[in-house]
Image 1 (cartoon, rainbow, N blue to C red):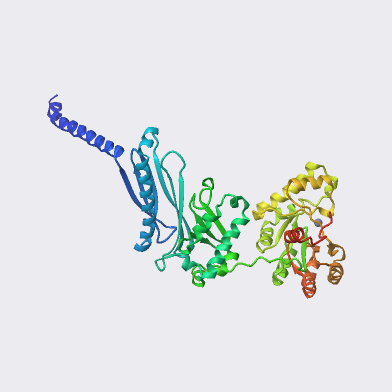
Image 2: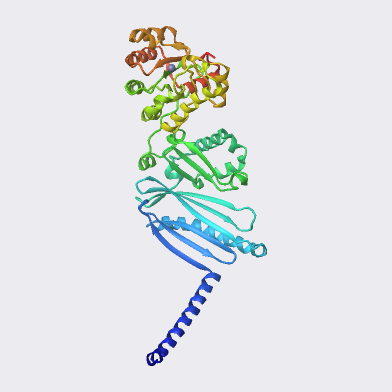
Length: 467
Ligand code: ZN
């Protein structure tokens, strides 16, 4: 009893302190909830050396705001980023102010969100793609985009005049390339306002460009050049079309490789397509690939699903070296003996194997033995695989003889021909160097089956397949 009485003053004090703490915490809590609360923190990046990310978060009764702002160690770069973000913030806040009444009436919280997509282009060179989305009245939001290429080695922002080798003529040519790219994209084309696009591209210093090894991308804000429902517009120009316009210093900085020019097909060209069936074969296919590479020839390989399943990396290698892949069914059955569902299974599972191995789908179907009927036609239509036969048979499977293969092909070859060969016989690999030489001597150029079809459809060259 005595001891308890002795402790009671301390208890009293403790209670008082506790009550005060609760009150203070409560006030603090109320304060942070009801007035502007701002948090800022900097997260340093391990993945993007030289870049940090600043997070800005703000909440009021009227709006919420969340910004991820990239920060470098360079004042000028940071200023340019900051300027754009400040503009977005001010624009947003003034819109909030304007629609204050509406927001309150509708109990709608306006929102601004700015995010950065970072892409590494080379050592300490990045594309920072700032994207700002704001919604301030409960109607439609709007999205703006600003790509910035920063070079932290030289502490510079790389703008259009660093990216391109500029003169007046080149600028208009680049604009033409952009217009053409829009025309090619029929879906986008119908939404683009041509006059707005021209206006946007008028001054090259304002071009918003990002880049990657495969392409150069022009970006436009929502509403800037197209109907609102399209959102932000990006027009991607493949590198092979724009490479020659790039500034050599920029190319060197980014270590950009000159892309191989797509063969420009001439309507009167002496083109043929070499096709290799029944592979991939672990011994023969690599030999064929080597010879094709030495002659810079692209061919088409009709692969069997079962072979691809066993040698997926070989299938991938064929595709990676620029050749085209076709479907030769899973197991080389005569499809005319099968019902529709079996035909479908034979074709589909081969496509699946090819896709698993290469992440690409085959472009066409060659039925084994060239045998097909209406069922095969219907299934191939359904699977969007045109049936491709051949017009020149090397008979390599029969003769197994280098000079016989050469004789057979050279006596029957013609412009627009599709030549049947097999990458499972070593004699075919033996014959290929001399065969290519003979064909080259006669002026033949080699393209893939898809290119030949395209040419045939466009220019009426043929017949290249027996259907
Ligand atoms: Zn075959």
